[in-house]
Image (cartoon, rainbow, N blue to C red; front, side, top):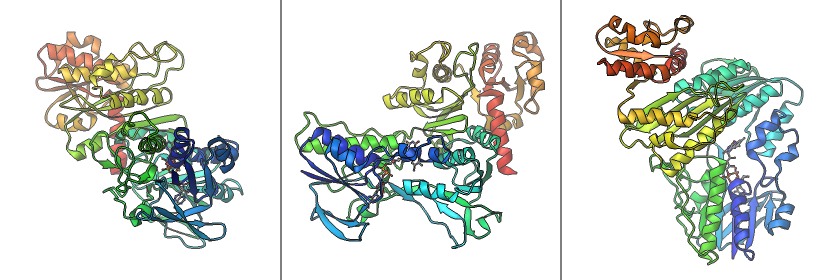
Length: 555
Ligand code: FAD
């Protein structure tokens, strides 16, 4: 069997090496257009910042090492320029001398990744522009900055844009981050993005939102709001689209998202051609609809799936391999000292889709508060209002974020409900967690909501409730109330509530505390004494983050 792989990094090399482990006798040829294969693209920003000191540390394999260990025929600087699906051949250009050759395949795996979505309107005398996707890009960025500290514009405030911004600051540069949307990290809901902006400001990153780069010339970067930023370098991190042109031209089916359409075993509309990685359309685990997710874990996993499917067809496996699981979009990014992670859908996505849902905010510490070094987490869980299914989560903080998002992602993968999170038995000792782990806490709140013993209101619903005549009771201590309060709130500390209940005005009540926990107790006291009371979800902290972001967005 002759297997040709297009693209020699995450998905392509996972497929090639897995196939070799299953089939010692197949001829496996990998064509890679770049100079390097199997390099750590996820590590590129960290070399700019000097966190990964050695450039060579990013070069995980070479054609020689892949030949000696896996007997792979890896040809760098070879670009596949056409696929003839009927003849089962690919046309390949040797970029060293421009010569072209044709190669036959029994099975083809397309792992060509993604490419930048647009190019800038750029004058020749403008600043250097670089994406940050390849080793060549990395060299270009470092060369542009070799003369010492400079102003750099990072266009795009997604995961890669934020990593680039952080590392450019670490390397001593002044950074302006330009984000088209209302806040950096668009998968986050508004109130969850406040901490990201604070972190960027703390590290002197200038953040320009609601605007885009319009043009580049000798004066620098022109934004569409009229601002001009003099700079030496623009890092283009505005996002990518699937590299699906080869597949499209070969007549393979392209999905509605623009990615290559595949089945659960990564087979394209031509059963002899497989496709994996960023170029491929995925199925969203929450909606069952087509989506694009460009993450390394999926590329690696799908590479393995494609290899398994090819080996199965060749009679080399005893059982048909499982189909690939739908995509959850689990992701995490470090923004200086802050970790920010997401999985599944945001509240904004759910509102836009008109899907009935509940939202839960919590602010527990990453480990027992009495043990030194506890850090506050900000957590948000999206839950299906009818089935209690977990639809998504967002977590940020300075410690323990990765553990919590991964537990929730695992729960989603396993089909656990939100209430089930309360019943997970998670590792605990004071340096690591709490007897009620933050994930358990989300489960307890979800359980209360599902059981009808935890009526709540969201920060963005508060103004409407107050306009309708509700009274807002702050059940924190007088000192907490004095240090910052929601306008119009009346301070009745929780421990005085039973005694002072007669003072409360008639009508609906909304109670709140700092994070939502004392507020829940207050709402329970009031509800059991016949008062209609809702707890402000996530308390003052969530309200403050949301109100501040709303003010900044509208000013
Ligand atoms: P790639 O790994 O991009 O490989 C595609 C290869 O195909 C390229 O080398 C390209 O040169 C080659 N190619 C394309 N067309 C042809 C052709 N016609 N002929 C020959 N070769 C061709 N994901 C995470 O999950 N976590 C992270 O922290 C993370 N950080 C990232 C940081 C950066 C800076 C970048 C760029 C990406 C990051 N990603 C991260 C995303 C992750 O790297 C990708 O999801 C993953 O690499 C996709 O794998 P792939 O095989 O589809 O594409």
